[in-house]
Length: 469
Ligand code: PA5
Image 1 (cartoon, helix red, strand yellow):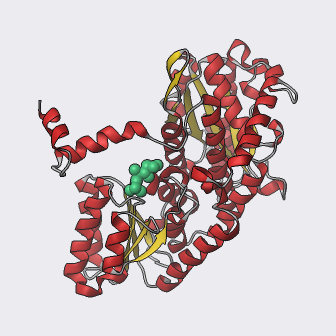
Image 2: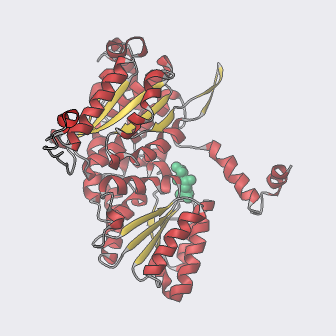
Image 3: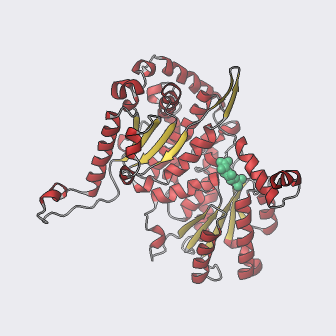
């Protein structure tokens, strides 16, 4: 993977997706050989992606470098510095691509106990990404009980359009609460990440004087985690966004290579798409052996599902592209899902996420004197977890279940930036391989419109009548 200090980089092992490992359920190694058909196809796609890189809906490829990065980091840091030491709580209001990156970054890069710590060097982060009244009410009750005037709380509303019903509803409620608590001076407790020029949220922010950061043009929700959409909560809560973007930039460069085996995104997309199309492995299970990467799998699920799950209308008629992304946690789900993965339908590719060095480890004490447990004594939890990953990989391979591993030397902002960029570029490749537009989501619209109709939004009366039939 990216060619700098090896120890800092992710690595990708796809050898257990080949027929040499999983027999008739794997890919022919000749397909992936340096001059083989997949390598040639990937080289052609690399050329195509080079010609569109940084344009149209592929502007996200420039998020980690050059003027766009400089602009974003400057704006984000100015806000983080303004509020430094002043906050106990950051509350993000957003949904889908406007929330999942925040959640993934926080859970990967801040401790599990971040929100529980008494010391508030870095504020707690709450991401309210649903219209569910219970978490909303509970979070607001907790905050108001501790900070009734919101002196130490900042709300960050993230919505490119400003018209997403769930976020808009939460925004209206929070704005009202803030106004009642702080009067006209409430504007400094709410910032927005939204379209820099147009849209409902932009208009509201301009009118109310809320500070804003941009969701840049050409960067769709699920490709926006490395823009101010994901950076602002990270920077406010103590994540090193420079390292995150450095990692992303290094990966992005590596993913421009025309050599299939030197381009991790091309290789990842090729293996998964070929396994899907040739071997019917259309369920993709991401299984981190690290709790801190578990919610990263939620971010990935949206990227992979919403980008690739599309109708393809070709000369042969209609086909349905896409893969079903599933998340599982190692070793926990060995005791829940692995029975299915080994003996159920052989329709899955398992994507292990492995960590070589954890930020902490715990030694298992010796001295109990119980023979049955002696093998654990003097070992450590990290060693056990690592053995469990290798054991599951072995067991799946024995059952001819293709699996691959993305290995983190450590979970750091650098490797997490690499990981996010890797999947974003892999998604761009996979979209081209499947013949779909990876950047639209037409099938989401009908449900949104039906919600508008059911909620009485003007202009949706006809649909409301149909819904009532
Ligand atoms: O990936 C996407 O485009 C979606 O998940 C959007 O991010 C989500 O619908 C929220 O949209 P908005 O940011 O306009 O509120």
